Length: 108
Image (spheres, rainbow, N blue to C red):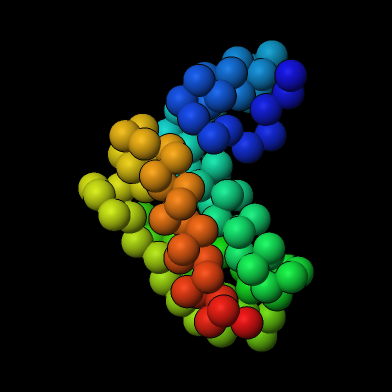
């Protein structure tokens, strides 16, 4: 099984091993950060019925920009960081990211 977007710590570790086999050396934190971004972007695309807004990292904050490049929303972690939230409860973080995607989209 090839893990694209890890949804828990077991999958993060599996993804880390898969990347290592392909010559990429990523830390757990790097993999979690990418997973958080990918999960949030997936929810955003789903809510908007297509890829209209783009999520990116600005420090520890997710920034949402619209098709014109204008910042429309920010999303911050509930706890100390998104990585800490993921490690504590990936499922709870996923629910939060889904709610924030709805909010960020303006429920379009």
